[in-house]
Image (cartoon, rainbow, N blue to C red):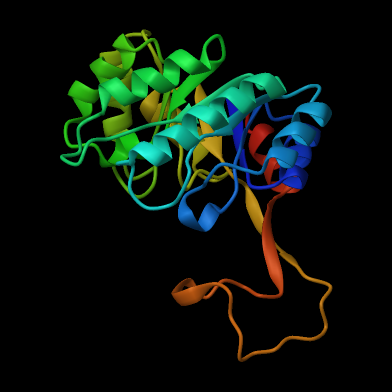
Length: 244
């Protein structure tokens, strides 16, 4: 089994390497579904991840996956930077307003990314015709699709993921992700027959702050914890990896 950790910080990436993860998908802003991390985070991750593959999420903002010309320019520049920094791969995806894969724009990003590997991310889970999208993504020479089977969690979408694995016939890697943990990964593997899995294994790290102004909240309506932050847990990752 290949275990990819969605790492929301340099520390999470280092924890993933220490736990024995095969690959890191480096990102920021997990509460928005992940966005592109900072240049320094990318560079330092590449410097310190000597035993773990490094993929970087290319996503300029949260929300949908229908991007403007300016956002495309940002993604193209981010991919160039990531390639120069020595990453092993990028994670990306672009849709049209009708939910179909934007083939032209995705191809532009893939062309710039080569020879790095490319994962088409969970934009796949909100596309309007997943089986058509599967064939289109395969034709673009993309190495894998990250998916929850168009459900909120990969476990809920397990039967659909199994269909994707079957239809792909080894032409592309189908990698389940979302809501995977040590209690369900073995069953998920049995149902889907997938060989790669994506998870964050995060836990709340409590802040050393002793003072808090309770009138101020920076998390908006989401109401994020102000005196703490999430980080990939070495213990959780090791417990999961030991399942195999």
